[in-house]
Amino acid sequence: MERLDKFIADRGDLSRRDAQKLIKGGEVTVDGAVCRQPDRKVDESSAVSVRGQAVSGEKFVYIMLNKPAGVVSATEDRRDRTVIDILPKEYRRRGLFPAGRLDKDTEGLLILTNDGDFAHRMLSPKKHVPKTYIASVDGAITQDMIRRFEEGVVFADGTRCLPAKLENITKNDNYVARVTICEGKFHQVKKMFATCGLNVVHLQRISVGNLYLDSNLPIGCCKYLTNLEIKQVFIGNIHENKD
Image 1 (cartoon, helix red, strand yellow):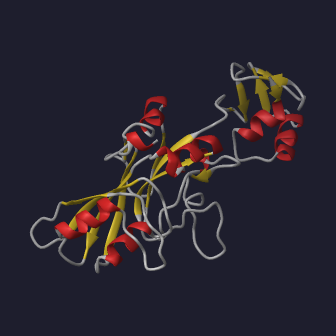
Image 2 (cartoon, rainbow, N blue to C red):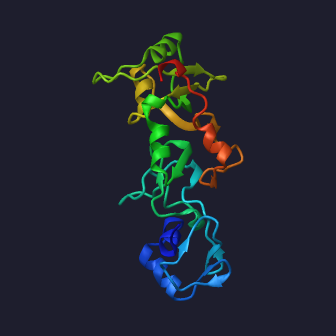
Image 3 (tube, rainbow, N blue to C red):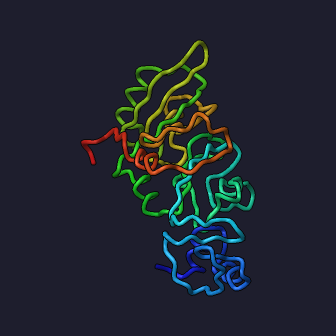
């Protein structure tokens, strides 16, 4: 059980003070009756509505965003639009943040949540949650590159990446690769190709674990993840024997 004002604030885009104003103003109902008491105790089974709109009882949310290029993976930014800025109002909640980052010009699957434990488990290199990308590059992909990815690419500063999987899916004259990594260093995929003498001209993340980007989700759009989809994030370990 928790206070009504906290219940509303934790599950929406309102501060506790704003929630209290709405409650005292008679704009909140609990189980069909107007409630003006911010300290009223409620739980997930309570039917809470604000201005006629039901408040979800779920404290944590998990959102799949098909991130477009040109927005940054942050909660706020002084210069650029963020992934939070482009969410429809009904998806926004206090405490919502991107679980991991995609570069500003990278598209594809990004998970937004207010569940810090979930994000930590997903991002920890020790958990070996694979992230798969489709990369268009400016040159041919060789067997030597595939071997270097498998052994763990070493950057110029000495940083060594964990073993990764590089697959050549080039068609005609378009050089395209599928890359699977289980960590998330800054600009990692681009830097890995750069050590092999190639530049990435387009990058899209298509999966995290066994959760794949919904092919029916247009760029810039989002949807709530189901419980089954959330579990898929932690399926598909490419380094099971090292965990």
